[in-house]
Image (tube, rainbow, N blue to C red; front, side, top):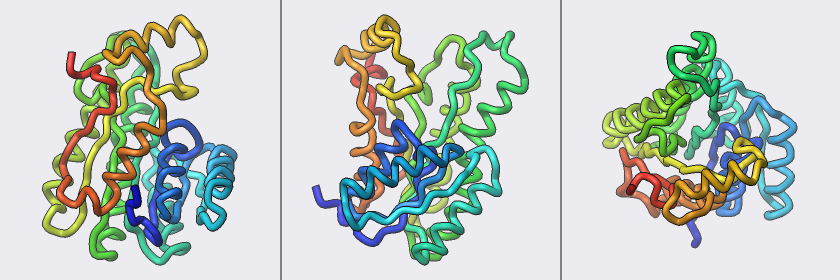
Amino acid sequence: MDLELQGKAAIVTGAASGIGRAIALALSREGADLVLADIDVAGCERTLALMRAARADAQGVVVRADAGECADHEATVNAALDAYGGLDIAVNNAGIGGEAKLTGEMSPEGWRRVIDVNLNGVYYAMHAQLPALLARGGGAIVNIASILGQAGWRTASAYVASKHGVVGLTKSAALEYAERGIRINAVGPGFIETPILGEDPEALAQLAALHPVKRLGQPGEVADLVAWLASARASLVTGAYYPVDGGYLAQ
């Protein structure tokens, strides 16, 4: 599908691997020019190399950014302005899992770090991105939440709280900017086959069994939806939360 993203300037946070890398590749494939932001610079450089291998004229800029630092989001937006003269699309994907502990046993420091990266980081990102999108006359933001933006999970209260927050933040901001030409949506991946899940075959099989389709998702399956939401093909879609979960939340 031609999503007509040629010449569009896009930011992807958490672009060094996994879902973020797949999103960057999908947007580049459709013609967008990218700013790749992550604390892992080497991973972003690899993403950029893959973009250029797939499309010879692919454009990309790498920025080292900690999603939990407001100033780093400002620097990421400035990189887009410097490289491309504006910003049209932002995908806020960076996130961490945090401590796997019961709520009463989780450290306050561990709680704060997850909230800082996963929830505050999305706010910091949009706070920096929205003025640039308004200056461009509009655009699209896609926030990567999780199926745990609508469900609970034992030993992951900070992560679950952060992703519920991302969904709520997305809906509120979408209402605020709908008449100003900015669409803001959230995507909720299920368990996707990325390095964060590890390589234990038994554990992966158990996770796959939780989904009615009886398999894990692939990063590209999330990326294709994100690319569509970022495009004008989704012109009537804002304030929505889209699970990509093989039926997990339908149970």
